[in-house]
Length: 510
Image (cartoon, rainbow, N blue to C red):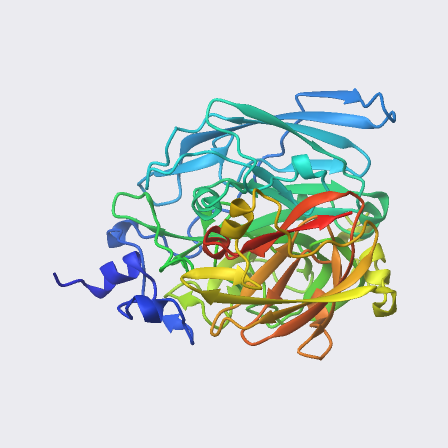
């Protein structure tokens, strides 16, 4: 049976390379599109307005009797719904409260949270029939093991789990997403992802707040002819869609005042990495990384942004004229699959709306920001260096030849590291997988990137991190302190098809 290039690209973005070749890309691949939509239904850049996800209000508030700390109680329901993404067709999704992205949770440092996550999803995924059991991970939180979203700690449809979050860490952009074993990629791609913001007094003083503190959840998708989400992970290597979504809308346009804005950019694509840049050539001012504010702001023309990483960026619109359009573009990186319009993310249209100049952040571009424990560590404090290699073998992605299959076979006892509580260690990650990049996520801890291939880390990643972009042929050295909890935590690739097959291991603290 003959297959058109358009069909091949829907079935596998790498085209007719064959299974062996599809498992090992060595260059970027370019094509027109991947979706099978009628051209009249194919979205085009800059046709729809920007929207933000709603803020989730607590269902109740209380006091923790153990320590007197305030507690916010939230209720979220995982359910099937439909989204309006395409010009006329609707798209079935799975979402927190039926939304993609789900509602944003915003609270202050020191206010604890209890999230009741109800799984009211269908018994089986509508696309491939896998059981829709879920496990919610608050990515960026130093949670106790039983609330960390351990992949095999699943909640079945018809049941719920209460997740308790301490929220003692410095201000940061976190996100919550499904982490169900072996189906994280499909569940997150279907919509189970949302941002979670934690504030503190220093961050509120330094950076824009309210309507000028903007969450951008960026993802990519491809669509079947009927408007449903297309899915193919190219022999577990990754999925690259031809439509870029920001907060669930294709290439939206945001109206902005002539002032400084703060953008919390989360790449929640399951495989695609980005290289954001502004069409005007103006700099992006990096002020925050995964674990919160950086010690000092960094000005960059563009930066690599892998799945699950969060960067907080200031953009200064003061110098632009009314009616001017500024595009946030994507230069892409090696070993993505790029299509006609994946070089664009969204646009900003400058308005003449009056600016409140009594707000001190309207024109503030801070240079010195906030230190952190992770960034205050020194290599001399490390008591041990551990080395890990990320690679592919026997059709599985592995970390030091270990996979989640090995963890399951061991009765969940096998660990790749056993640091003592509060020990400082250096972890060296070598990417020996050939033509692949891997965003590696280590649960529980914030870490400092010491070096990349023996050189200093990039300017934009000189802040506390919990995901590191390990590029093709790169070796990174990470410095971290293991605490404040004892227990078993995961480390895995955040190219989610890699995680699901089976690039995830675990370590034990204490």
